[in-house]
Length: 87
Image (cartoon, rainbow, N blue to C red; front, side, top):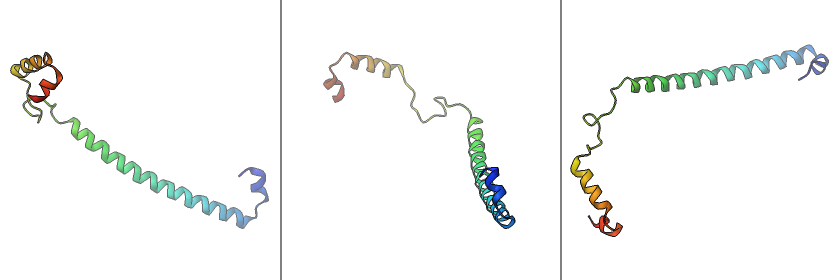
């Protein structure tokens, strides 16, 4: 609302406008506080995850690749695709 419009409002209208704006500001502050709390919790969880030791074959659910796996894969690469699917 521009200044010229505000000058035309009565005292009671201005008070009502201020009260309405105060309610909107309070709602925004509450919403932002909730969002800040949510994001802070996510950051805390991610920082805790960063503190964990890095994954390696000893502490990972991923299997280790052995030399025989590599040799088998290289042998399968030479077979037609239908034959490698049967193995």
